[in-house]
Image (tube, rainbow, N blue to C red):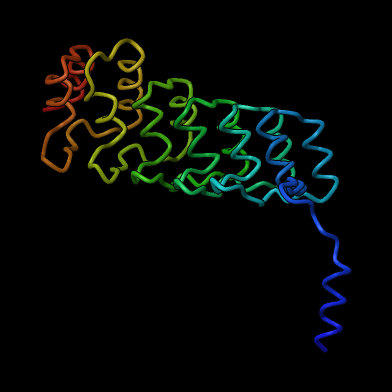
Length: 220
């Protein structure tokens, strides 16, 4: 038996020391998606690469395309059945990341493909909250056309309206976001975990236009 095992091992192909391990089709698919190479994405899918495969970040090919804002590759991957709600190591999904980072066209793709509006990021927030905080007005418009919870509270105790109002230097974009949130039913008096209201935050931050909107909506 020992002689047989020794012979079998000798017969195995030996890789030269330091030689790179060739990437798999799955890895190639993720790389092609990140690079936005639609033709190459098609090629690797045709060669059996899995849309569910992940890299060391927990990214699928769709997540890689979303990070790089590669709309064509993302559209192809969604059509091939990629999961728009698959979360990575940081608890971001293609849907959540697209919403938070202003990837408008990919956000639309994920919503059309069944994005989970109740899914949350590592801070316990929906896609709407960081979209508002970062001033991605077009994303906010799209998300407010869905049934997303406009008054969802994240782990920090903040709603989308709170995130819009509370930081200094808010300008016309955030003022418009606040207006749209209030029109969509955002509660102007829903406080944070310390009992501070959106109006109090807006006043403290010097955001007078947002504060005026909140007062007009009954904020205290």
